Structure formats: structure tokens, C-alpha cells
Length: 280
Image (cartoon, rainbow, N blue to C red; front, side, top):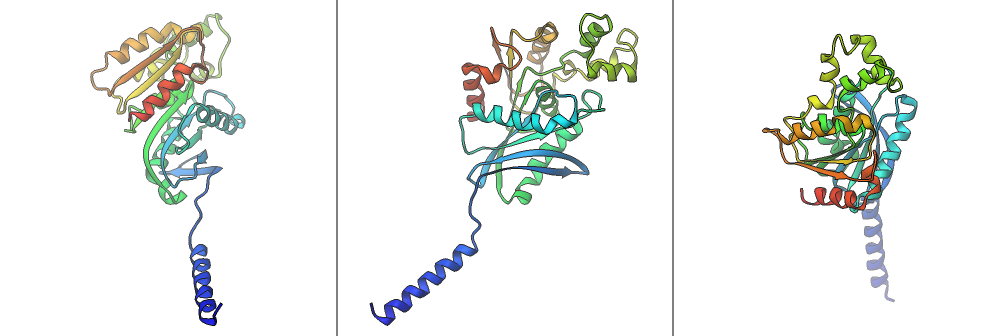
């Protein structure tokens, strides 16, 4: 090999090595991050795929009551939705919204902050490009994403077993000793008194009060063997949502022989979930 050839190869090697130092490698990761939007902070678990241009699925866990459990719940909810998601190129952001010492519905503030962070700040803070944004929630998480759908436009929303649908009925049952006491109703009673004397605040925090003005298409998944509390108000909720005149498309998937976690257990629900995302 001539000295000239050796010199040219050395220059080429040096150039490639220099370029490689200036390029950040594309990588997948899962991290816990405290995010802030307009002074409201909340922890999120971020599961990023290999690609740096991503559609995003923002997910919300069900009730765990104590804040010592919410990060674990966020991790588990992320894993649950990731298992049924057929795409491997979506980033999932799971929101560890607080519950302890809050009245039902007050944590919509943190739920909203996480969504707005994804919409407006994730690109810069994570160094990537976000495209479409979808919301998905289970149980109280479904309650929150349905509420968020009355507040902010996204590309689509999925709510599994959303509730509480009707806090007036639920808390009346507790007051009458027909079911066990819950933290949600105990807190509302301390603030507002009995449902029989002051039902309005209970109704205002019920999902039955959020059946209009949906800004994105929404898929509701409901197992028909869910709890009696849920199923008592489900027909009314469905009827009210169906009657909405200022909502985007509403889709109901009702699944016999399945309970509260239907979306994670049914192949029919899995297909509906992925088709919903794929078509939007």
C-alpha cells in the first residue's frame, strides 16, 4: 500500500470518528421524570421506542388511594397498555397522578398538566418530535381521560371501565351501609355532608356530568360483568353520551362475561383498541 493511499485512509478514518462523536445515537429507554406545566408538577413514566419521531400514548392508572402506590400503578398501567398495543414505534407516557388527601376529581389538575407537557414541552425536554397524541385510561384513569376530552383536543381517547359514573348513587349506598366505605365518599361527606341533603357537589364530580363537548373521538370499553355500582349507572351514562350533539365520534364496546379489566383480557377489545388508534 502506497504512502498516499495510507494517508487518504487515515484522513477517512479520522473523519468518520469525528462525525460519530457529534451524532447522538438513537436509543430506547424507560425513565421516571418529574414534569411541570404552568406551575403544576407530576411524575410520569416514559417508555420511548428506538425512533425519535413518535406518536404518543398518554395513559392513566386506576384508583390506588395512597400516593405511595401511584408510581407502581403507573408502571403497571404502562405495561398493561404496552402489552395490548401492536405498534412498537409509539412512545407511552404513564401519569402517576396523585390521589391521597384529594377529593375525587381534584387530580384533574395534575392529569391535565401531564397532557399539556406532552403537547407543548416534551419535544424540547426529550429531544424528539411528537406527532399524534392519544389518551387511554383504566377505571379512575378512564374517568380522567373522559374529563380531559371535554377540555383539550387530541387525536383520540380510550376509556376502559371509566368511573365513578355516579357518586350520588355510590355514596348513598355507603351511607345506607349497603356497601363498604370508600375514601372517595368519606372525603366528599366530610366536605359536603350527606348526599340526601346536598347531592349537587357529588353529581358535579361524577362522570355523568361529563357527557358533552368531547373534543376527540372516544372509545369506551366496558365489561358487562363489572361491579353492580358501575353497571347500575352504565346504561344512563351510555344514553347521555349517545345523545350528545357537540361531541366527536363516540364508540361503545360492551363485552359480556368480562369485568372491570376487560380491555386487558379480551382479544376483541385489543383489536378495537389498535384499530381505533390506527384509523386516526
